[in-house]
Length: 137
Ligand code: CDP
Ligand code: MG
Image (cartoon, rainbow, N blue to C red; front, side):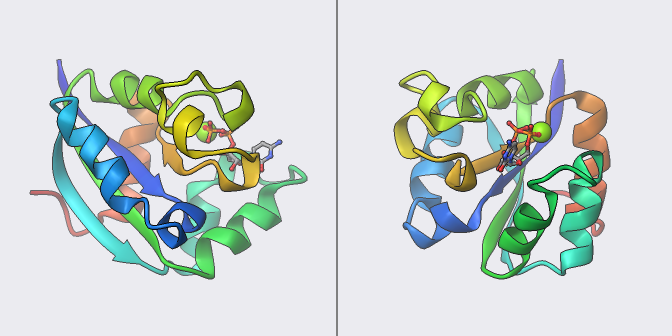
């Protein structure tokens, strides 16, 4: 089943010059871009994106982090794209992420864990609406 998911390259990875490496891995897997932009989002956009985490100790920090420096938002399309991308990104804590995953290869701390990716198809639909209200190619 072809589906489309949402990936964000977080500010630390953008700052470390890893946009190309992340995009390379996604394209090499056989997935395709249906949207791609470098942006510095409004805090309200990030708050809506991370609404499920409102009230948790890390919520303020991550909302500040993602709205005070450039990030990349991508729509990624392909067979089972939601699961394929989640598996490719690896565990939330980079020290627990398997080698070969984006976080296991390119991350070290949870504050700089390289990427966000939607967890489910429903989340992907909701998040794509937030980051790509103009629609996808
Ligand atoms: O990103 P993922 O879906 O793997 O993890 P999450 O549990 O949905 O958490 C969202 C993001 O919040 C993580 O990717 C981390 O950047 C951050 N976080 C954190 O800083 N400290 C935690 N204890 C949990 C999450
Ligand atoms: Mg999550």
